[in-house]
Length: 635
Ligand code: WTA
Image (cartoon, rainbow, N blue to C red; front, side):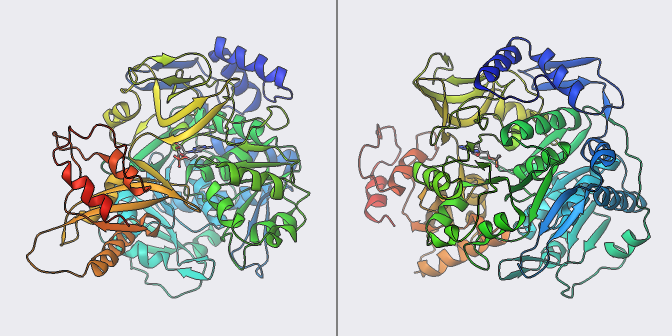
């Protein structure tokens, strides 16, 4: 266990230095000492940064669910693995032990096999935050099928795109889901998606709301009767270290969403190692991450990371505002949560409400509080630290991405002194670099640049499903020999990192990573729209909101702009999801463009935040006069 837990700053620096000097040896030891393998590896790592090829734990054999479940049964079979806290506080919480988890996952796995799912097949999962979501994910991993979880807030066309991109053979969904005071008709949305998904052979439906749904003969099956008949034990498939564990879609700045591919062994080692250290998880603790399993945070830090460590992990179905703004704190008190991990957007939303919503609850079980998803501003940091952490819990601001598989830069609680708005220091094995515009690495401290990672780590995504070239182009070609994160960062006088935000055309809205290009594509489909450009602008609660500049077609008729704006948002809502709706829409006569026809987004970003001058050199614009007009009619 030598390098597994980091108990002091001195030890952190020692381990960090070791991990950089001899990365292979470092990961070799972590992997061997802390996980269960069917067969060990021939080589720890082979890689080629330019070609974006990574092989971790070459030829090792394992099953991640044996590490998440089976190996805990002897020691802690009766310990709670999952606490399910339903949307409605009046509905009783469920405590699912490791023994029960084994049984449920086995049943699910047996049903999948019986319904024709084999190793390597892709299974799409579109479920609310209920225990069955965890069972479905783990059942796929158990039999070697590839899970592709789609966040249940996505629309039918977004779901269809994702199903088709990786030709999923099966969809697992439910009759619906509860979110606050709403009932979401997931099956209805799925049915619409399934009109256009030729690869889907079967749909398994979990009963949650009890609402009547349409079941298509020969395609749709209720899962409950199948589970009832299925055996409660199963043999885990033996997987190669580099077999695909899952695909998870993330927004791209252009074109369709990117199906990030994570493989078995490297992801497991990285998720397990980072969970243990970043949350200082100790036996018996109750850990709660409020993210949705539809995002990478839920994959790595609701399911895999905690279960790999034999933890008790909370799955929460609801929202922070239902039945009122005290819900998070009520749940922390009720389940005596020790580690609490959420997003800045939730913190900002709660900080706006009356302080009694927090103060009325006993939060003294908390030991560590965490943040993820976007930069946490100073005010939110302090509110969280003071009112939730009671100034006694270390606040871990964890920086990472869907592509990195696990946390990359973060304080280690009780070890790294925290500094508001700083993600602080890289975890062992992670080698950040800041790059300047000339693609040179910037050495030294008190500098800013584009954040890259210089050396592979086990959790790195292996490719984009079906498009390795796009993987190379997006992440490995801007700074040859390095992984480019797309984020900017500054390094302070002691070497702490602060992430300043995206440097490309991706905007983070309420913690959701949204590419602007796919939204523009949707807007442009509107019959009255000629062209559009979207930028993000700071928003008090959501972090960023979207501002759309839209050129209407010259149809020779007057149109009701308010009506068009409503229609545009309806289109976005239908095709991508309500999270991508525009907060402001301005109809403009033209967009500032370079001579090569590229929209100058930097100007649009400045206008959106209210700047009226200092646009830099706009003489290179094709149509500088349009800028004045846009400023004049700013929303
Ligand atoms: C942003 C979420 C600042 C960043 C795990 C990154 C952050 C993107 C932080 C990835 C943080 C995430 N501080 N920014 N602590 N954590 N980000 O793929 O821009 O949904 O590139 O993964 O979120 O978002 P994704």
